[in-house]
Image (cartoon, rainbow, N blue to C red; front, side, top):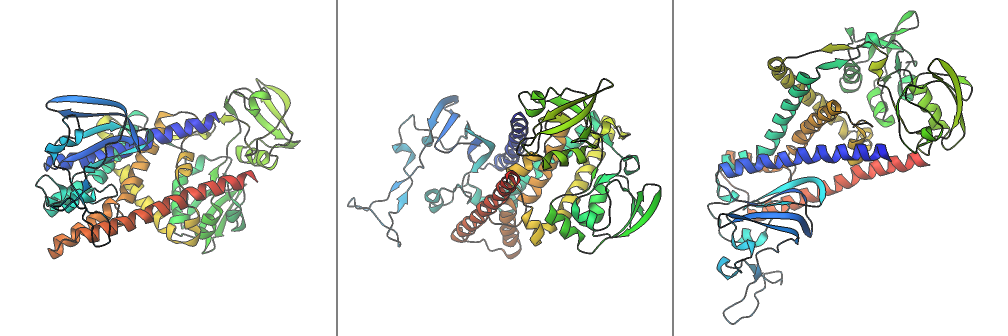
Length: 495
């Protein structure tokens, strides 16, 4: 449970930073073009907010744990006081004149932004006046356009306002990658230094690999990193692999459908390394078995094994069953019985592969880190775009994941380098995904604006409203499907 909370906290903090800054990009361009921003919220605030504040008559007013303000509207009436219905028979609404609102009603002062902190810690939002989006005020949009509204700005100004969030996310990714390289450098385990070889999922074993193989070349090109193996085999579809197996060098020919099979299995090759405990979670199975930091497991249920992948697989096969382990502590052999939980976990954090395998480290000065960070970000974007095409295969769509999958990317113990690298990676993904030409996303708006710039014809507000609604429904379905996949995988692991 402790590991879950550590991962969840990292996920919430990372997504909050990314979405808040994304929305701030929209805010900056909107204010630059003198467009009103009705609301800017950190976190979401359905029904009520933890705190909200607004500048009124030169002074900030604060409200705590207050209900959300209703939309500034009322039922429209004719000169005889009868309600007016629209063509669908529903009451027609109109805006309440500002002078009729009470003095302490914040809706009376739309010229200043309402700032606030919501209570659902997943990002935030920026509501721009006169913009047709998922939070649109239909009554306000039925009124004549005002000079301070988004819809009154020229097409290029609107395009920049829409693109502001994506632009900030790209800039943030480059800044974070540069900062990570400047502070920590870039450290990786060269494929040549994977002295215990690689561990392969069943799909790759069936293709001819054996656990312990060292991958030397793919399509005649020398391999430096694990990421290169991933890109060559899964993304580029290369098939000729040179491996070192024991004292022999062998040539393997991969089947053409290997990428699809790897996707279907959901696992890829990983570097093999010894199972040595770095920390023990309190009140977990390992703590109850009195395992300690530095213990090195060398046998499970009488079978000699010392590599992480072999041992974790053995624990998974013995879920909730008594499992005998032999380990080394301070040079002495010890033995105990442990009960892996329903997920095959024992509640430990292992030492990283870099503790056992020689790494290459590239260090960067402040000036050097800037172009290196830019190159890192571009490389990440290119790789992700290649991966994105796999989503449109039947195997790829099954691997779509939601918050659970994203949270699983974060380490089990807090690590600032890993946190900022993953935040930069997610910033690239958020920027790319947001710029897809889907109504309701920034890319959908941009597509309609480019159409307007080319043709000189602006899509009607009714069309934009319907397109936004359709896009929003599609996004909700996608979100439910992705998180449903996470839930299904979790439940499958329990039974």
